[in-house]
Each structure stands twice: as C-alpha cells, then as structure tokens.
Image 1 (cartoon, rainbow, N blue to C red):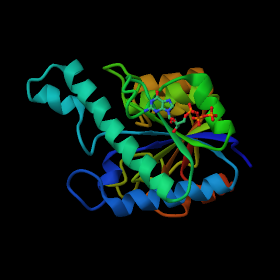
Image 2: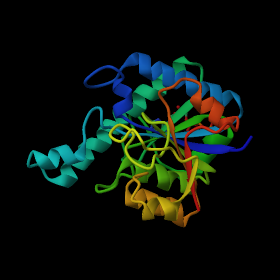
Image 3: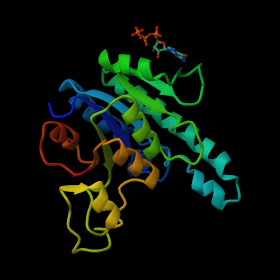
Image 4: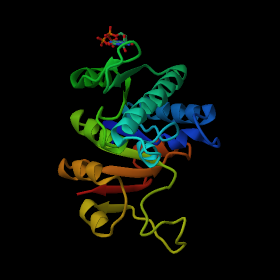
Length: 235
Ligand code: GTP
C-alpha cells in the first residue's frame, strides 16, 4: 500500500449533489461506500469536510456581517456535515469517531491529537469537525493542519474536477492536466490548489496533496491501489 494513513478532504458543496442547498442523501451514501472500500484495503482514514453547502463565512461578510462571526457559523456548518457523514459511514458498517475543534461535548468528542491517532490505529474512521476552531482559516487549512498533526502520508482533496490543469478546463478547452507538479511550479504558474495558508503548510511540512475527482465512484480506491488518478502536488 502506497499510503498507510490518509487525510481525505471533502467539499461541503459536493454534498449537495443535484440539490441547490443542504445534503443529498444519495451523494452521502456514495461517499460512504467509497470510503468503506478504501478502509477495507487497510488504510487509516481521517476526514475533514467543508460547510459550503450550508454556510460560507465570506457570504456573511458580503451581507454586512462581521467576518469572524460568519466564520464561526461556517464551522458549525462543518459539524452538521460531519455528523451526517458519520451517520452515513456507520450505516455502511464502519466504526467512526467525530472530534470537534470547538467544544460541544454533548454531540462530539473534543479534538485530542493523541486520541485521534489511537482511534485510527484501532481502525476507526476519524472525522475532524469545526475546522481549526479559528476564524480566518479555511477547511483546507484545517485539513492540512490535522494531516500534519496525525502524520498522514498524504492529503486527498476530493473535488468535482479530476486534477490540476494548466488553465480552468471549464473555460479553456485547450487546458491540459498535470499528473505531477511541484509546489514551487504550481505557485509560479498561479495555479489554485488550496488557499495559500493550506498550501504553505503542506509545502513546508513536505506533505503531498492529491487533487482528484471524488464524484466518480471507484476513483478513491483506484488511487489508493496505486493507479494514476488526479494530480499530485509535492516538493
Ligand atoms: P477506546 O478508549 O479506544 O475504547 O476509545 P472509545 O472512543 O471507544 O472510548 P470512550 O469510552 O472514550 O468513547 C466511547 C464513545 O463515547 C465513543 O463513541 C466516543 O466518540 C464518545 N465520546 C467520548 N468522549 C466524548 C465526549 O466528550 N463527548 C461526546 N459527545 N462523546 C464522547
């Protein structure tokens, strides 16, 4: 196995599936079965999921709300998605633990790094909710931070596109996809992999990022079995 421990970053928006808002149960169960497939390969799986299908901090700012206030609302949105994902994973037969960066002890364990690692060692899927617990940080940053803390071998960033292109493939039909790109090259070309905070954390801690299409069932498993799926960004 190429990767022993992974951090899977899922987009909140993808959870909408065909819907305009909220959570599409079909999408949720597709994700759960894909995660189950890789868990069965023996991979230790930690997950961070965004909250954009429910609330985005930047939206709040546009409406005149204080950015920090909006960001905290966004963190709560990630907890709703995390709980939904936890339920879907458990109905698929996986054992899970949810840890929150903001204390809400009636519904989640608090984030405790050593405990998270122990859960992973015991074969539990660990979901990290509430981002980093701080405003001004995205869930991509939370994913990078947690991945580094738990010594994950890689971040798998599930998106709607199947990798990183020379230009936006939805706008420029001549755009071509990279199989591999270095952090420096991606930066020099102005390619958007993650926000700069997340990107820099990964680069400085030598943590590769693989951007891949999570909405094509089977992709995640193929990736972990060593097939060329998506784009890997590394030093
Ligand atoms: P082991 O010590 O490895 O057996 O791990 P464990 O997670 O099974 O131990 P524990 O007895 O601490 O947890 C049992 C259940 O309670 C798990 O589902 C935990 O997620 C949950 N749990 C533990 N701490 C908290 C907490 O502070 N708040 C909430 N809501 N649940 C908790």
